[in-house]
Image (cartoon, rainbow over all chains, first blue to last red; front, side, top):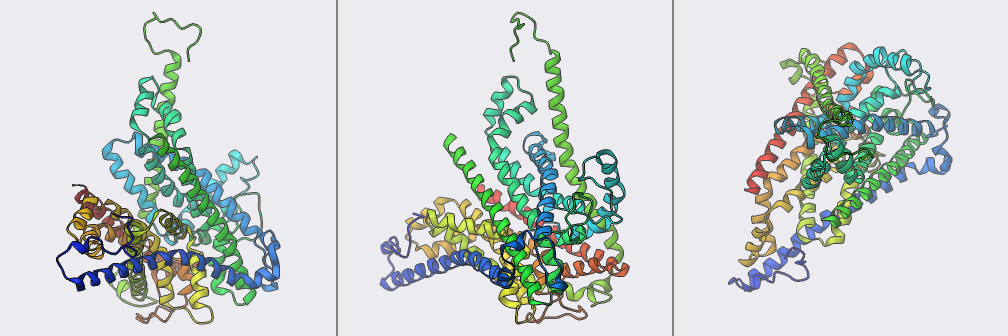
Length: 331
Length: 291
């Protein structure tokens, strides 16, 4: 009854109604109209995605024809000399997002485990919404907080401590004079992606059949062994998909990163130096971009960001779907 | 597990191995608990810092005057931009969801869902670039362009949220309507939509909460303003709260910072109230639907 298209088989049921021929015709027209409007709205979504991609590529055209693909790995960015390259921003984007994921994913998965399996019911009902509320904080406020409260703490306490204890690893170099650094940006991104990954993984863990877990407990497994041996293996692909969604969010965050990363143009091994990401460079320089080539180059950064973002999202979808199929098969 | 020295007649006591496993399990549990409370602590710290610093900037004058003493134009601007965005995104989102649940076949559903999820996953700065290229380039910035950008951000949220509640509408309502000979459009308008109304509103309010704080697209399409007086013209660049906070934080002078804290407090209050309210509504309509 739900899959029948009203356009092709209009109102079979209306025929039985006592109303006259005119009402039937009216219903037929109205059914067709409703179908048409709904289909149009749904089509608009699909068209929108294509138009967005087209428009961003179109805006980048001057830069694409001037610099070609070499733009992607070129590391100089000097608007005054008309030299543009995405290399250092690409590097900053990947480093900041992966550091955020490396810190955030374990925390978020632990939160998911706590909320789904460990927390008492009353506590769960309170902490779950609070964690999700973290995702509702606008990025501009988080960035503003980051630059005024978090950055001084990171620069004055966290970075010296990491440098002193783990300084032999080159990524923990000497702290800068301000707290603006790739590391601070990663921490802000961590705060943003934790609620996303946590709420998806909580739902995944909740869906693991209770009797399998009880079976493991009955065989003498401790709570951790149930998690390690039953819960995590059966949700791996879903958790990976959730992490990819978080990664996609981190890659594309513009505003908060702009505020705390310090807009440096060099590639540094140390996380405690300034840097920049694709999205943040667009946000910080677009309003002041005067030359056409500068604008087009920023659009080109957008094209790269669009491709990376779409790929991480598609990967998440694909892995998530595989997970769905497998669960359906075992049911 | 079973060592060669296993003796089935020995009494069952916790050996060193079991104690170690239990201790490890306990540590893992504590770690997970700690992670959850850590996240809540971060939320508390952020809200606390905003509340303490923002409260000292707040006053009646702050809320009702224009720049440089107040933020009324930015508040009104954000309100208008978001209202127009909602007026665009809500009907489109609901219609899309109706199409997905009432009409579409399997392949269409999959394609449409996929694109909605992709749009939802797009970095908001990309949407800003798109709207800039579409409406602002060679013209000028406008509040309307900002609304279009926010509407694109809201569309997938409204559509997917509505779709979820439409799927919850009991099948026997549809069957009952069909059995009475009610035509499809009447069923949709008089049976399905009313029973899903609570859920649709919830999804919309959540989308509004998300859009109200979006900054990245507005920086490209509605950021050149002086914010001295309240504007109602959507064809001009409109002052708005998120962009103003961003600008003040980049300028970095102490007075501006104090104002930005105040604006942050106002914005965060509105957004958190909206999302808490939406969640409460969601819980209520779920209970009603399932009873």
